[in-house]
Image 1 (tube, rainbow, N blue to C red):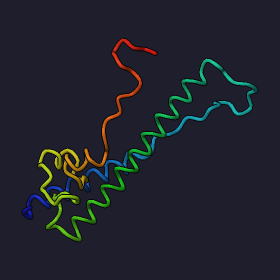
Image 2: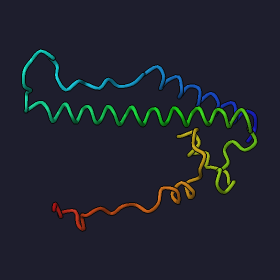
Image 3: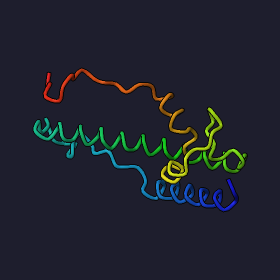
Length: 130
């Protein structure tokens, strides 16, 4: 990878890190809005729990991406010659994949092997709701 491409990926990584840090974590809504109130609104509780689960999941995902961006910047600084190469097979990662996720360290084939086979789940047909 030439110096101009490395510079472009460094800028993308730094911009992505700045964007994630600027947004901050999503606030997890408390289960009770009024701590002095006795009991709870049973109709509202499932929605609050779902909102908490979504916010928690998004925060975990963002922290994972932030860690991967940091690791990619370290790889870029320490060994710029191997940046953009798969860490498993040493083949170049496609430019399209690098543009979408400049922090990846595996090519598509190695990532699929690492993820394992797709889970089919218990449903056998689209209309099978059991």
